[in-house]
Length: 70
View (spheres, rainbow, N blue to C red):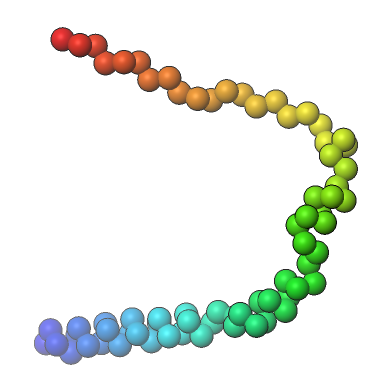
């Protein structure tokens, strides 16, 4: 009884793994889609940072007290 159940679980896992691997897009299609995007250096050069508001960041660092020595 245990061997057929183990075989069935292994078969389902193998089928699921191969189905998931097939669902991914091939690298050639991925690179064709991203080839039309300009380089990041060009994007940074064309942005106008003076229009952005100043951002205030609250200090959220933690200070741990030292352990008392007995």
